[in-house]
Image (cartoon, rainbow, N blue to C red):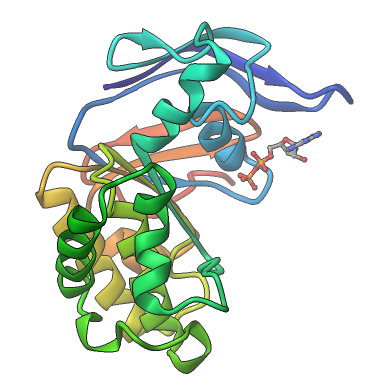
Length: 229
Ligand code: ADP
């Protein structure tokens, strides 16, 4: 469970990234984070992975303070969270298989385990037959599948997706959303920042709307409506 208690983030130049946010996200929930550019979506996700510390307030993950965490505990926190980005961020000089295996190898997973988990996860995202290709040989949708495989191969409890469909056409976006929804059905919490109104309206998940650093709406089965005049 993720809990933000009265969290404010003021940057050094005085800009407020978030102002007095309180919100809980249960394990296994699917949450869309929406709002205009500059609303605080990235600040929210960067606080969650402790890339930033809040100016005030408390942030807990599964009952443990992220803020009080020692620096040696941060890698463990980040292993619980998988990331997917709009621009895929694959290693161009490595194959599909190597891209997905990288995260496992980096944490010292035994090779026998890597050889089991990587093909299974590539299969799950529907890219098993392209394991030997390099990213530049793949379409955008295929590259995003690889990025998702890499993000979940460690079995994180949370998947953070930042505009994962931002570079994809509508049909491919729906395919990617089906995969993300399947990952959610297996119990992974999804937090997805997006401007894709069609997807938000279609999926009817929880929608948290941020504007100027504040939560202005939080609806279960919500739609894409900022409610900003
Ligand atoms: P979003 O992801 O919704 O576009 P952000 O969280 O990036 O919004 O930004 C929220 C506010 O904080 C904006 O006004 C932005 O300009 C400001 N901001 C973000 N990062 C910094 C930073 N490192 N220094 C100063 N201001 C920042």
